[in-house]
Image 1 (cartoon, protein in one colour):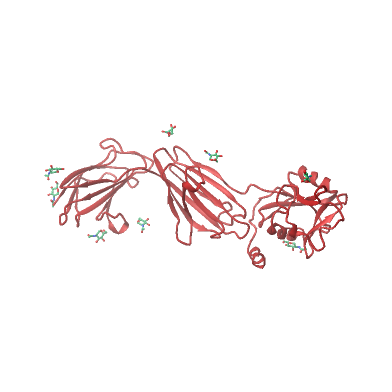
Image 2 (spheres, protein in one colour):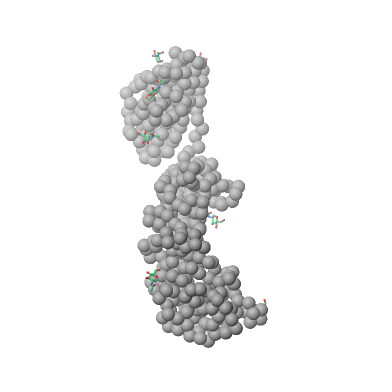
Length: 374
Ligand SMILES: *[C@@H]1O[C@H](CO)[C@@H](O)[C@H](O)[C@H]1NC(C)=O
Ligand SMILES: *[C@@H]1O[C@H](CO)[C@@H](O)[C@H](O)[C@H]1NC(C)=O
Ligand SMILES: *[C@@H]1O[C@H](CO)[C@@H](O)[C@H](O)[C@H]1NC(C)=O
Ligand SMILES: *[C@@H]1O[C@H](CO)[C@@H](O)[C@H](O)[C@H]1NC(C)=O
Ligand SMILES: *[C@@H]1O[C@H](CO)[C@@H](O)[C@H](O)[C@H]1NC(C)=O
Ligand SMILES: *[C@@H]1O[C@H](CO)[C@@H](O)[C@H](O)[C@H]1NC(C)=O
Ligand SMILES: *[C@@H]1O[C@H](CO)[C@@H](O)[C@H](O)[C@H]1NC(C)=O
Ligand SMILES: *[C@@H]1O[C@H](CO)[C@@H](O)[C@H](O)[C@H]1NC(C)=O
């Protein structure tokens, strides 16, 4: 418990309007609380809470009990709790059906001095039996909608971003949020979480295939510990689940997703060949990302000649690599716009590769290339 108390001291409130006016947000329980100025009998306090859009506070965890100590610190009279005795069984129960912790009674309780329950703040704090007809403040609670759960994307959306609630200041405890991403037909989704700062191990972000959170559709868990930040789906629907526990929050995360067409790599070997952009000589499509691999007999080289080339300048381009591995360090040329042809290049090794990329606007006929070995 001492450990938990230390934890709480790190929790700071998110500046915002989580609760309706007159209610106070508690970051440990992520709930809103209100204590009435007027005094009520037990039954009337229950009605009062209902009338202002809440319910009587039934304590459902030790962390909530500890939070109530702080919340009631300026309340002189002990407020009602949503708990009472079942006079048939003689056992106490929470009105909201949550588990009733018998270890939360204060000293010498439960006594026979009543059938209803108030909250005693002074140490040892806890539950105290009170006659139901007594006049005490009502103590009400409501759970605000803190998740920014959303259905994102759509049949014509190729990319987007979303973020944890409260980002970049602080997310909340006790969250269970869902983000369902849809991309165009015949695409798959890549996603990157960056920045990503959460209470690792206790709070989690999980990625799933389709509209699912089942074990069978699990893709991965985002982690700054092992640098797992990027994931991809095989289909055009991806579900992201963000769950947080009852203590410690942090800045949160920003997710950036992109739809990608499923375009298998075009591979050519032998002595010569022809390579073209998708649909050539007709216009290529938007959001193409086509990879080409060429290899010839060991000791030979690839002699590449582009004899026709027209793309949207800067945004649609053909990358040429002097390796089968495509990276900045193997990039030889980025061709774009109205390239003067013929454009010729001889690979230093017996293999080379290319990647053609187009964006969402302005399509042209693309390019035509021939290669032979030399
Ligand atoms: C009650 O608690 C609040 C926040 O927990 C604190 O700001 C305030 O000073 C406390 N008041 C008293 C009388 O202890
Ligand atoms: C009290 O307990 C009895 C026996 O378990 C049950 O039948 C009854 O519904 C309970 N009453 C309330 C108000 O929960
Ligand atoms: C996408 O696929 C779904 C299901 O196969 C189909 O109902 C829908 O018409 C397709 N949408 C487009 C834009 O092709
Ligand atoms: C996703 O699945 C949930 C739970 O099965 C369901 O309630 C929801 O309607 C689904 N959403 C969509 C967009 O299919
Ligand atoms: C080009 O390759 C084809 C087989 O793909 C071969 O039949 C032909 O002889 C080659 N032409 C030259 C000039 O090497
Ligand atoms: C490369 O191919 C072009 C066009 O076919 C040809 O003109 C050129 O001589 C070739 N270069 C080499 C080094 O084989
Ligand atoms: C590769 O180069 C591009 C453009 O210069 C740059 O934005 C990107 O960060 C580089 N990637 C790596 C891995 O260095
Ligand atoms: C491949 O291209 C890179 C970048 O232009 C260059 O630094 C590297 O030396 C080239 N490799 C070979 C084998 O020519």
